[in-house]
Amino acid sequence: MTLALNDIQGNIVPGFFKDAQDFLFVRFPSSQAGRAWLAQLREQLSAADKIVPVNQSYLNARAEHPDREPKHDPSRWINVAISYQGFQQLGTIGVDQLPKDFARASDKRRELLGDPLENFATWKVGGPNSEADAVLILGANSEAELDELVGSFGVIAQGEYDGVTQDRIIVLELLAR
Image 1: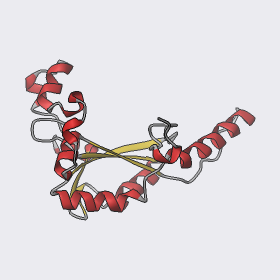
Image 2: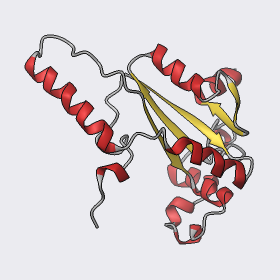
Image 3: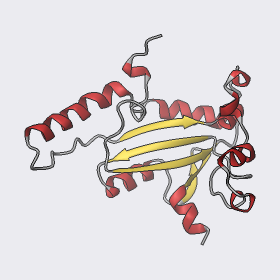
């Protein structure tokens, strides 16, 4: 099977090549809300066919002038990953046919990783009551651009975007102090 670059998210191949990146962990309050949010997000996703030429241009500029940093492309990249729990919450048909390692509950992953039970209870994401349905992977050229990109999803701290609860891991850590 051959996949076209427009069918592959760009954080997988070739990678974002962005100086600032962040992750937003998302929970779907319902199948309908999750599906609506993903449909809205679809047009914003960064496929590999868009990222490859930008990254190649950057690498060519570095090769031509290794003594200076090339001008960054103004593009901001967005990709999404959906967890097993997220597929279940969305009511995805055939979710039971996904690999068992992908379907493994967080407590079983904890055991495999060798994380002590007392640490598991404090996990901000992936713990006993904090499994994410999806992760937004964001990339920008600077922290300021990244903050603007994060804000475009309605997340300043912890909040909602079109009815979908989102937690920014940095904020969760601050809230846990």
